[in-house]
Every structure is written in C-alpha cells, then in structure tokens.
Image (cartoon, rainbow over all chains, first blue to last red; front, side, top):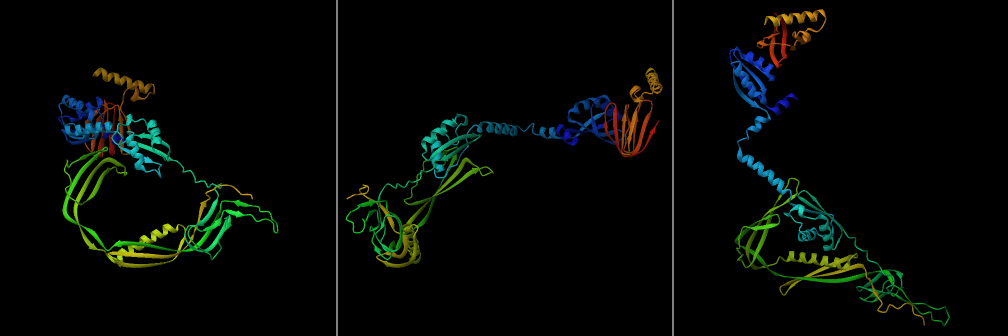
Length: 406
Length: 93
C-alpha cells in the first residue's frame, strides 16, 4: 500500500554531501520532511529518498546545514507525467481527441434495426433516412417518438416501432404485423374438378358426390366430385325431392404423366477480358460519398464492374459509417464458343426437375425418363415423368343459388 | 542551557517521585525493541552517526548506540525514529 502511495505522489532520490550530513537528517525530521531508504555512503555523503512535494524544502534545509543536495532520480506518477509537459504536439493531439470524442458522440454513427423478419432492413433503413435518421445526423435533433410514429405509417408490415438513442447508436426496434389467416368460406358452393389428366388411384370424398371411381381415367377439367347432389325420393315414390347444393370437398389421387421440355443453344458467346482496366476509388463518410475519380467516364463498350468495399469496424464487429470502395472496371469482348454438351444437358435436366417439382407441389415422382436431342443449333432435353399427385381443384358454381326444389 | 538541564532533572525526579511515566513528563527517550530486527525510539534528539553496523542517536543527556548488521534508518520524524536490521546490542553512554 505504501508503495502505491509513494508511486502516486512521486518520490525523489537525493544525494546529500557536506561536513555533517546527519544534521541534514535531523533537520528534515524536525521540519516534518519525511524520508526513507537512508544510505550512508561515507562520512560526508548519504542518500535519502523524499516525497516529491518535499524536494524544495529539502534543498532549503540542505543549504541551512551547509550540505549540497543533488537530485539523483525522480520516480512515480508525477515524474512520468512531467515528461509530457513539453510535448506540445501530444497535448494538442490529446485535446483534439477529447474534443472529437465530445463532439462526435453527439452524432449518430450507426443505425441498428432489429425485430424484423419479413420486412427488409433495407426498406426500414431507407424510410428512416427519409425521416432524417441516418449516420452523421445530429442526435439531439431527432425526435424518437415522432420518428417511430411516422415510420409506422410509412412501412406497411409494421405494427409497433420504437426509436432509442443510445449514444452514437440509433436503435430501432420493430414488431411486424401478423398476417391474417386465409378464411375458407363454406358458403361458396362448387365442384371439384381435375387439375391435370390422369388415372384415378385413390379417392376420399368428404362432401359432395363422387363423379369418378378408382381406375377411371380423367382429363383436365373433368368433374371429380359433384357439388350438385340429386336427392333420391323413396322407392316406388313419385315425389322428386330436388337437388341439394354443397361445397364439394375431398382428395383425389391419380397417376399422371407429365412431359416437360427445355432447350439451350449449342453455341454461346463467352467473355474474354481485353486487359484494359480502370480502378475507381471512393470514400463513404457518414452517408456521403466522396469520389476520387472526378468526372472521368467509362469508355469501354462492354465491361464488368467489380466492387470491393472495406468498411471500418470496431473490435466487437460493429460497423462504422466509414468505408472505402474500389470499383474495378474490366473491359471485355465476346466471342462465340461451343457449349459443353454434357454440362448443358446436366443443366437442362436440373431445370426440368425443378419445374416438375413446382408443378407437382406435394406429389411424388414415380419414374422419370430423359431424352436429349441436338438439332438446329440447339440442345433439347425432354422429361417424361410418371407421378402420383392430388389432382382435385375446387371450382365454385357460377350460380350460387341454394338447394332447388321441384 | 544549564537552566534547561536543571529543569529536565527536576522533571525527571518528579516523574520518579510521583511514579509518572518519564517519557511523558520529562521527555526522556523511550526505546522499544521488537526482537532483534526492529528498534523504535521516541523523544530522540537527532542522529549523531550513521552506518550499517552502528547508529548513534542522541537522547538528550545520553547517547544511544545501536550495533548490528545491515542497520537501516527506516523512518524518522521530529520525535520518533525506526531502525531495522539485525540488532546485536544497544549501548547507552
């Protein structure tokens, strides 16, 4: 503890030379100058350590007893800080840094959006920018409540919003609207018809009257479950009870056969870089872009633009509103080149598989057969697939009249 | 000087007669030895000689000679001092 105190208040090692250096010690003790680490060198010389604040008094006391007091070494925090006394540039830098911290902390450096899943952050940030909340804006000038209200009005998918100013960070918390579930209207009456042609393998009718049976072949649009049900009268009776109209409902599974086709030219134009290249540098500071390339345009007819952005970030990964951008413009010419047939076929097969999956929905593929043909400068791949899928599709009646009585 | 000495003598006797502590009443030096490593002295009158093997301290009428090895004057103020090291003997003259 004493060492820490001595370090904080600073200490000075003194060498005292004179005829009677012990008188110096006694005088120091009488005058309240505390000293320690006394080292007697010889009869007329000794070394002591005193607190930095007692240095002047020690010298004065030394003069009284005809002793020469020389400073040998200064230690502790004050001595360390005194080294910087004449470093004006350092002091100026320190002052400027402190001022920069004080001034810059008043400005928004980052805008953080959280709580959104379906509404894109870019959309929210874009609207916030229009409302004046963006990196570089003066923080106290933002009205968080008004901004949050305005943001709710401007962005459709939001149900709640709050803007919190935390130092240089504008934190925007949002909650999204919950989508209204699609309501099935039971009052709409209609039939279930075939969405695609196929061979019926399984049917389960929940409402309505089955118009087909297992093993039947149906065409697209053909009636599968009728919503118009004729109510049979009693046997041998002459009374016609009429028709009952319902919303037909049920699952009709069928084997279907689908044919899909895709093609690609056998010759493609490929890029070859000419070697000409221009680098365009720009700096983005607090949302403002500073171009270093002036007004120089791009003279190439065809070119690729590759953009590299280096953003300054804090050790925690927080991005700062300072980025350096390099846009590399590379000129190229296009030349015709033959396409690799195997790779092209692979590509077309993948495309056809994807298209089939989209058409089937929850259905499954039983077997698939691919045929490819190269003719007239094109490669054509045809997919013939046997599938099992639910083919029912509800079609409402044009006339929604209720049950009919004879 | 003589007057002061007489006064001190009276105070010393008074302390003896009334059974009072001499260091308080007469300002006599008080020496406290802790083992052989530390010597604390109150009411001293200053250092007379200093060395690692011997330190002479004035106690007014008498001189306290502290002998030992690696002696060091650890702390000192107007009335107290602390000597550390291996103390081998204390002599009063």
